[in-house]
Image 1 (cartoon, rainbow, N blue to C red):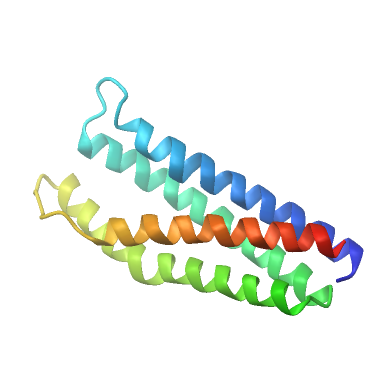
Image 2: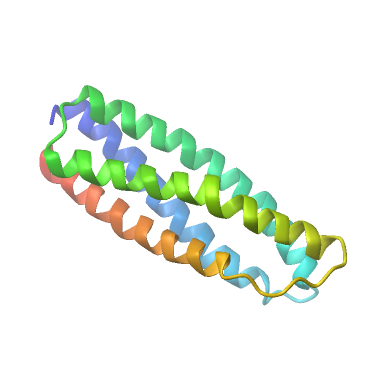
Length: 143
């Protein structure tokens, strides 16, 4: 892969990886342990934080994709990039809307049954972290 596009893609991927770690695996579970943060408040905060994270993820995905396309990727880089894009699309198009509907109900004072969608989201976050890590390593090696 060409050096300059590989460097841009590496930076985008590693920033993306750090953000997912910080938000999904630190902020999200810890906010519910803070004094005075009940489920509706935590969900309201989570909605705002994850909406912002997802917007930044889309931007980083576009930067990564552009740099990789320009840089003549190896098969491994192209495959890992495709996997990450599918994971992100699944989270944003399939899972997030369902989680948002459940959050709307909780914020409206209802108590819907627990949803397995949250577990799917967390599973995809873990898969995304592993894939971003592998892509970051492939990009570093490709430079």
